[in-house]
Length: 80
Image 1: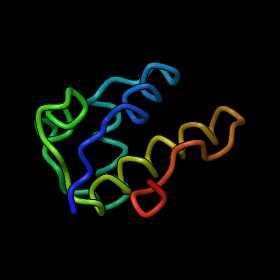
Image 2 (image 1 turned 30 degrees about the horizontal axis):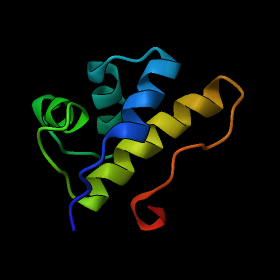
Image 3 (image 1 turned 90 degrees about the horizontal axis):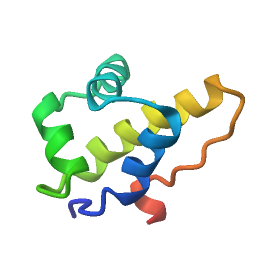
């Protein structure tokens, strides 16, 4: 089932000061295969994405939170 609510991930980008492009690049490093346009469309609420793709984006953002001394605040798809 696709994930359609970008709210928590979009808010995390604001907190982290990340651009869509930075999140996308981080996700590629984790094996993600979305196009940057797909990430942008999801984050603006124009398109849902597969749970696996969502989880890769969440992992990329959670890794950034760890980098700044935080925890893993974003829930994965199976926790939504």
